[in-house]
Image (cartoon, rainbow, N blue to C red; front, side, top):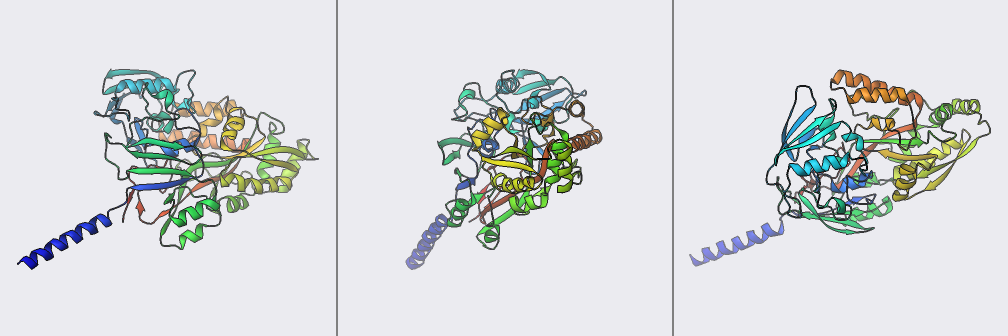
Length: 493
């Protein structure tokens, strides 16, 4: 009998050790190509800010799910008035910010009023332009009254730029972000990584991970060995170069190719010669061989586009045939524009591989028709300052990853320097329209105007190429908004 008890005890100890030994991991290192300039999504345009903070540190009234759907977030429910102008949000109770302060309706009012203020730093102020007033009904109820109905209002409130912040910490969120999300900020080693840890007082469903490090690795030559060695366990947007097949044939990894909202474009400064001439912009568009660019800049995985809309959108219109690759036509148009002898311009390229690799190909294609494009590599902070803010550029390549953002071409001070009253009128009408059929018609018209005006060189929709450890689940396949949402991520050991 004693022997049997001893065996049972030994078995129990062994099982206990086995359970501990095989417990699922709760830490994760994710690779990112770009380091964010700061960590406040309400005060900067860089997608890298949201790739760290969205749904992890900060939350909004609504959130965008992995398939682009609008989901409740800090607002557990809402009602909409019959005229479509008044949204009454019922907020979750028991929510706290990471510094221990309580969240309530006054924080929503503060955040929305701050985002739409005249001196706001918010990069997407147009999201809030339709708001007339924000009123606190009680601590758990907030009423937002719009100037006119806006069919996309709930979707807009799910953008990273619309997250809710506290007045006590709003001014320091760039360096020490404080939100209501399931992860809180721990450390930022500039030039290296940002580390988040699980929030102990999170109001919602607990997350699986205790710790997540976002490590900044800008090129494939460093990213590949980091993944193969296990130093980095996931690269949601892998700078693949020619290494993708290496991971596809290795059972230790998952390779997941999905879609993004990233319209990758050759932007032209429409307010500056020679690109203030339609014929020159058209010539550039005819000079572009999209297939060669897609093959070289995205391993053939990008989808060609002819206007500013994702092919995955239900409202997408295929306008890739507007300017087929035709170097002879490009030369003819340049001659008509008075540039028969050619012209010299600069092509400023930010760090992402799609820009640097694509830039080399595009410069060659432009050279073939008489446009000498001097390549100027710039760091991301330089791009944001020189190109996006100061509009000091001729040509540049960038992927616009914000969802449903065709309205950027109607902004008076946007870096394209594009002005078209007809296009602006379509966007104004779109903002007032909730009917899906009418919205589809207007979006089709808007896409056609941009294509005809050759505002930019429309290249391809940026693919989302994710590579991660085969034991990891919960990372997004597609990227409807810039995000590395870790709320469902876990290890299956």
